[in-house]
Image (cartoon, rainbow, N blue to C red; front, side, top):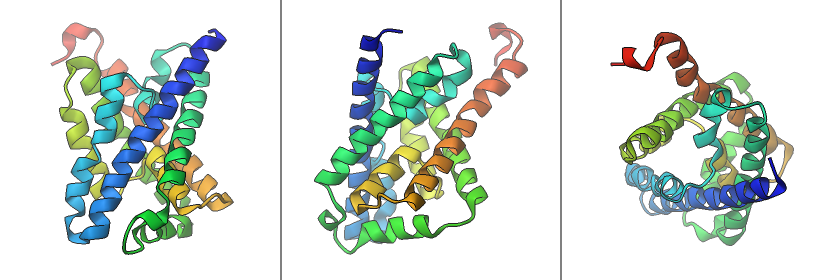
Length: 214
């Protein structure tokens, strides 16, 4: 791979981080006005994944499921992608700090995450989110339709699952640049990876040839 490849990948990743951050903002905005209508914000959050799919941006949770479908060098792509996603989230977090949202909604979301010490629970929430993100990404890849995103995004939010890139924005918006936030993100990102590869790995085993698929 050339340096130009990685630079383009990094730029696409920054834009993807910003797209997910916009989804986070609309979710926080709805929550700040009326907590009872968070489900509306959860649906509107899908604008982030819609943007990623539409413009072919590089989002960690959308790419990690294909880790074992690519050459080992793809792992470096994933590292660059997650770093670029963070830069995009950091930019948006600086532009939309916690004070931009009413009713102390950002600390109410972030503080419980930072207080969690059950790492297996954090990991598990990341796994389930990873499964959903692969479903959304692979459905779009195969069908060129957004139904997967529209369904998967509200489900992971309302179920309380953890999306590593969304969490990056929440922490950046809250100014939570600390070890607790870093550990939380690393665990969630690993969970997203494990969840993301479950279906593709099982699919390789379950279906001997493409013709056997239902």
